[in-house]
Amino acid sequence: MAALPLRALTLRQLQFFSVLVEEGQFGRAARRLAITQPALSNAIKQMEKLLGAELLTRSTHRLELTPVGAEVLARTDFLVNTFEVALRDIESTVQRGRAFVRVGVIPSASARVAAAVSEFLQQDGQREVELAWRDAPSTTLLAELRSGQLDMAVAAITEPPGGLTCIDLFRDPLVLVVRRDHPLAAAGDANWEAIGKERLVLFESGSMPALGNPARAQFAQGAEPYRVSYSETLYALVRSGQALGLMPRLYTASLRDPELAVVPLLKPRIERRVVLAYLPGPMRNVVAQELIALLRNRLPQAEEPRSRRVTRGHPLDAIRRRR
Image (cartoon, rainbow, N blue to C red; front, side, top):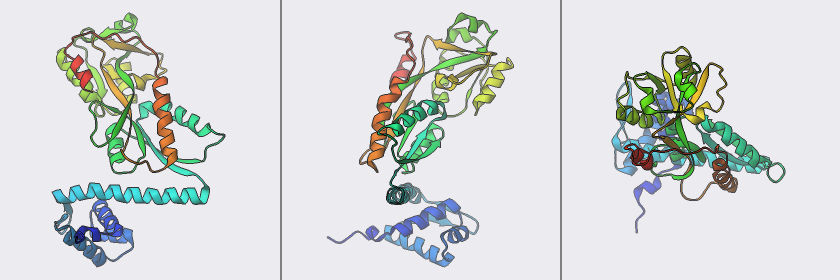
């Protein structure tokens, strides 16, 4: 059987393509790769010839990926990242006698994950591991997992992400953050009707749009909420009396503000799933496998025990079951 032409593709050509797309210009990419611009152009043309498809549309001032080029880039980045990390892993193991593991985590879960990883490092005396940490929103972490830039990630999801293995760790419910002199602070907990027409402030990205918007629609909440990127801004708006904060409970674990109170939000209790995610198939090294095994056992145990008061048969129960 004749070999497929694409089997003539080299890792170097894939690296050229990846860098070119990242730089967006032949000149800059050639300088970064320490080759001439004609050599880079020829390498890309050879890739397109082997694949039998155009990868880029070229103009005087910009490059654009074709639909085929976008698909090839996703797989190219995975191969390039995996190769580069494998080289770093070999170097770390041979020169320093330690494995290299890349861990991603959403900021709100970082305290729990760091404590569990610290326990892992202390096992068997002092484990020889070189760690790389990445904190980012869940969407970013899951994309970097797929592209081979991370070995594992603790992320929050509302729907199962495609192409990844996900282990449920715990559920993280939504809570209200209110001024301490607000009536809801004295009540101890609240339901969605109690919010009434008061304005909310919530995070503009991550899982909050998928969690908060259906509930607001169900209970006909008042003004459109403020949407912010950082917890400091959310707390400032609550502290000033402009809004009630709506956020996952994990974010409030380190809140020590005498002016603010955290109020459990019940009826219905809406939660996001916090999962340990990684690529299916063989793991890069044994240490990464062992760390995944520890995290899947330790992180669920770290959840604070709380009663789960959920109204049965409520229309939003379906949202919780789908997540």
